[in-house]
Length: 135
Image 1 (cartoon, rainbow, N blue to C red):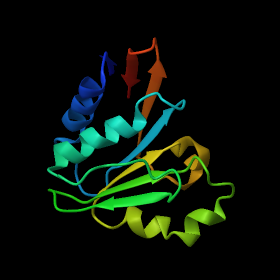
Image 2: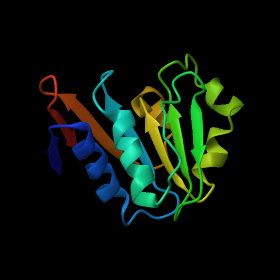
Image 3: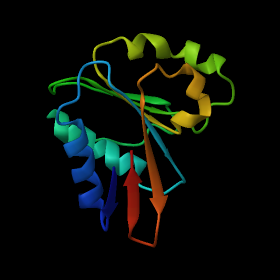
Image 4: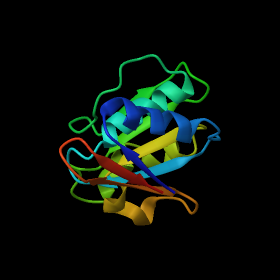
């Protein structure tokens, strides 16, 4: 499926729609260049799960946890990770089995660590404001 977003609100709306029927254990690998809309999409995931906490990029912390919704949301950013062993240091595998939704920016960096059935979501920049989101 492909969706086009012309603004931040539309990107968040697409995320909220996608997570509407998500089950515990859902893993989303978010793939796209810097500025393509991955974090805005995760903001939509949080809204769709009923999480009201502000969502920010975990680029420097690698992981943000959000609770208080239908399912917990575990928001990872692999951008700054250099070696696969860093995933063990943060307990990545435990989060995969923690009964929530895992949204992983730059998930293709360590794709071998993602479980079978993980959904790949591709973000592309068509123009200054237009983004294409495909899964």
